[in-house]
Image 1: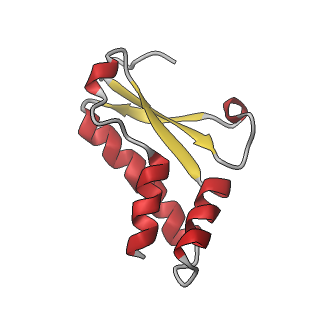
Image 2: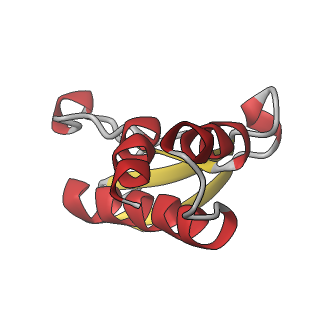
Length: 99
């Protein structure tokens, strides 16, 4: 996976599939780190909204995400640009707490 001409590529692994490379796909290329992070967050938010009942307990919602949800990540040729690094799992945990 190489950096796109635009700067940041977002790839998505499926938390359900192991090893992840078999189900990995490219979500898109983005000009800025902020745009790439926003795309990752939208993907996680969409899964939590559509696939995980909001009436479940925090631990159950997060467990559903970590077992079945998308795991987007950002790739660039300049790793120092990924600061702070985006973690879909950490973001999902935060979103589960919000409801």
